Length: 126
Image (cartoon, rainbow, N blue to C red; front, side, top):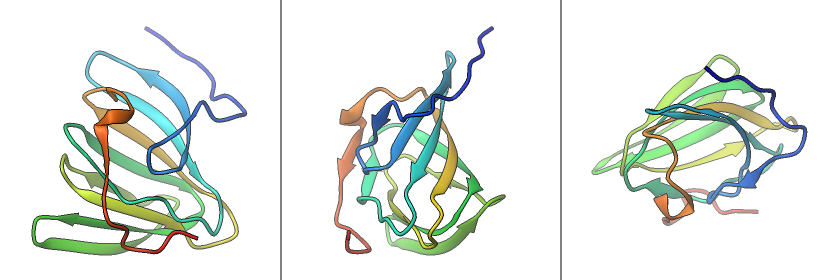
């Protein structure tokens, strides 16, 4: 059994440019708190092998996902959740002044920065 508290400063910048605070890891999954500053746009990426489950806990924004011939853009705010299956291209942005904050569960646990592959952006990065 394990527990902890989120650090005040982020631990690492994700390959998409968002701020990541490590929140725990088990044998089958890992969890982080992700912050994208207000008005910011992430880089578009896809993950090679992991699946992610997102729960938005603060701010407002949009998430774009593309898998095969299917794509969608959805609005997100506190209480929204979505999935990012392996191989899905995705990008997100904080549309308000407040940061977009997301709790992300990754299964299996995040293997490292090489997991994310840079893809063509849906939205231009500012």
